[in-house]
Image 1: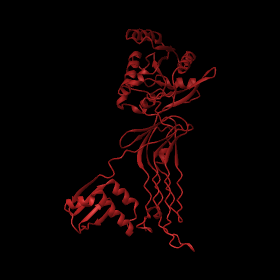
Image 2: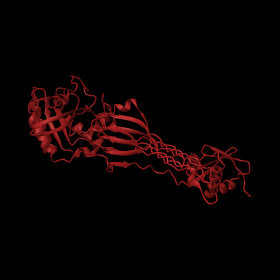
Image 3: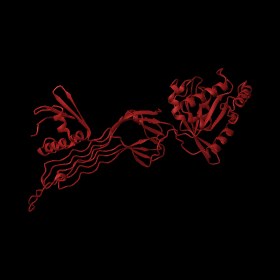
Image 4: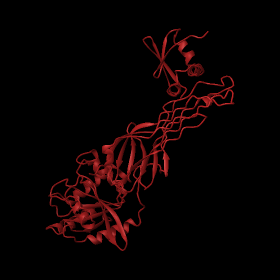
Length: 435
C-alpha cells in the first residue's frame, strides 16, 4: 500500500526530576545539601532513510514520545541524559505544523535530520539552591516537560521524471515498458490511483527514476478527481513528460487535453511551468493518429509553443521509446537535482526547529471569576510546574516570585483582600495581605 500523507503526535522527553538529599558521612559534620540535577529528556528527531518509500508505518503508530531523563542522584550526581528518539521517514517528506500549517522541514537527502520536538531540561537538585542565608534548602525542581505538537507528514515522490496526462492515455503502459515496474493497467479511467516508480536504464551507464502519476482532470487544482493527491508529487520531478493520446481514442481533442493539463499545473503552482517538458505523442499505431499529430504541431506553432519537443511513440507497440529516453537522459544531465518548489530554508544535517514564544514570560493578566482571581503568567506557571509546592522552601520561593513580578501588588489593586482565593495555572492559594 502506498501512503503519502499522515498526521502524527510527537513529544520530546520530559527532563528528569532533581532530588533533595543531604550528605551523611562519618567524620563529615554539617555535610550540607547533595541532591543532584535530573537529566535532560531525549529529543525527537526525524531522519531520512532512503530504504523507505511510503508513510505506511505511520498508519499504525501515530504517537511518538521520546524517553525522559533520569532522576538526579545523591552525592551531587546528575541523572543520565535520555537517548534521543529517531523516527525514520522516506526521502521527499515534508513536515508541516498541524496548527499553523507552517512548513517545518523539507527532508530530501539520505541521513538528513531535524529535531522536531526538543526534550525538556532536567530539574535542579537542592544543592543548586544553597545560599549563605539558606545553606540547607529543602527544595528541588521537577524536570521540564518536553515540547509536543501534532504534525502532518506529506510525501512527495523523489522521481527525476514524472509522467502526466489525462486518464487512460498510456502512462502506466509506458512505465511498464521502459522499467521493471508493474503498475496496474486497465481500460478504464483512474486505473492508477497511487504513484508508481520505476528505474529506467537508458544504457551507456545512464539511468533515472520515472514516476507514473495518477491521471488529472479539469479542476484538479481545486481537489476535483484525485486533485492534490496527484499534484503534490509533480513538484519533485525535474522533467515532465506529458503523455497525450494522439489517436483521440476517448474522443477528446489531443491539443485541448494538453492545454487543460498544463492549465491545472499552472493553477496549482506556477513554478511547475518552468520545468522542462517533453510531449510523448502516444498511440501512434492507431488509425488517425498521424493526422491528429499534424494538427497538434500546427496548433503548437500557432500559439507559440513550437519550441517544445514532440516524440511520436506507441507504448503498446514499443515504437519510438528509445529516442524519448535518450533525449530525457540528455536533459537530466543539465538539470540540478531535487528542485524544491517551496521556499524552504536548507536543512542542515541536524536542524532544530525553534518554537516561537507566545509572549514575554514576565507578562501577566488578572481577571475575576466570581470570587476567584485568575492570574495568567507564563513564567510563574512554568515555575509552578517544576517546583515542589509541598515544601516550606518551595512556598517561600513562590511568594518571592509573585512579589518580584508585581503580581501581588496588582492583585491588591484589583481588589484582592486577605482570604480571597487566587489561581495561577492549576495551583490555587489563599491571598494574604502583607503589612
